[in-house]
Amino acid sequence: MNAPYAITAVIIVALATLGIGAFGLRFSRTTSDFYVASRSVSPVWNSSAISGEYLSAASFLGVAGLALTFGADMLWYPIGWTAGYLLLLVFVAAPLRRSGAYTIPDFAQVRLQSIAVRRAASLLVVGVGWLYLMPQFQGAGLTLRTVTGAPRWVGVVIVASVVVLNVISGGMRSITFVQAFQYWLKLTALLVPLIFLLHAWSGDGAPVPVTDSDWIFPLFDADAQGIYRTYSVIIATFLGTMGLPHVVVRFYTNPDGRAARRTTLIVLALLGTFYLMPPIYGVLGRMYASDLIAEGRTDAVVLELPGRMIGGGLGDLLAALLTAGAFAAFLSTSSGLTMSIAGVVGQDLQQSRYGKRLTGITALRIAAIGCIIVPVILALLAEQIAVANSVTFAFALAASTFCPLLILGIWWRGLTAAGAIAGMIGGGLCAGTATVLTISLQLEGWLGLILGQPAAWSVPVGFALMIGVSLATRKAVPANVSRTMVRLHTPERLDVDRRP
Image 1 (cartoon, rainbow, N blue to C red):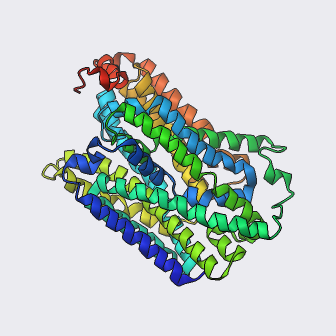
Image 2: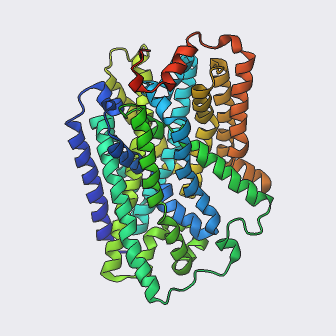
């Protein structure tokens, strides 16, 4: 690939991101603007922003890489990531918005009247956010190295710097404008090159990718390990979406519960449209870039195809467009994650004895700078692993902790603070320990599979602990639980008393 084209694409995306963020700064004046955009984002804007935020490196690069390597079974990833919004629509979106909270820890405190639950939820927000941020930064380093030959740390530092500048300049208001723009950029960046690639494939006589039935057909002659892996991925992706802090926080920006539901429906359409394309890149990669499997560079297949199939100046231009889309993916998701972490840590910092003199905006800015350091270090030091696989760890952790908290907190009045803490700690330890062991030990066989895909057992542990401990401490159910449940489930148009 022509390196100057790629460098130009990265610079344009970075400057456009900073420029749009600066435009959003004109509307960011209050603490509510910085944390939840004053709860005034329309469903169309919000759905574009959510989609831009959600379509991370795992979606833009990872899905194609997994499809290249493992075939049709990997389609469960985009299916699960999209279907998770359907469950979020049915069970969580509107009640969560009606809670009036800024963050998941806010919701936990409102629902369970417990500072201890809030602190446990805050720690988990940071853990999930760091686990999700690390592959975004790793993907940025991989992309820039692939297209320009630059050291891996360059891409990491560029993305981290742009993200911090956007968050501290305008908070959620600026991030909303940026992420909405970046969704449409990512969609265009995949669609336009794909049209040319399919034309080139047709000009080659439309060759068949493979004859390997294990690659073409899902669960073809699957053994027990294949079935376990598939269903564990389904559980993690279906349930993990509603527990991702950067996803949940965007629903607080809607004006009301009805707008939150409309936003979710539009998101389903936007994500479904986007996810039609990465698997096609994987199939084309099977024909034109299968050597990337042996080299361990499958996440680069999207960026490699224009040069291999088309070449010349046009191939360089298309690869530059894909590079721009990839960097938009890193920037948008990293911005949302940093915003969600900074929002939680900033509130806790302001409430601490050391931060009582800080304004909400200042606390948010300090938290944003501090919280991004750890995932940057992890991205530079940790061994490069498949982007989509590493993101699945974050989904498994969210599904094992925040999913039970939200589902039971919204729909079961019997949840207690002790039960919530037990479930979050138990589910979090199971999913978190499995992730650490998988990354550090690289185990094989059934043990490696169970630890590498923990959602099938860590999610039931989280739910079981929350329910069991709540039943054992049923006398500790908050006294105002009935009023809280009415508040969560009563449509705003009925004009009931909605004060905390």
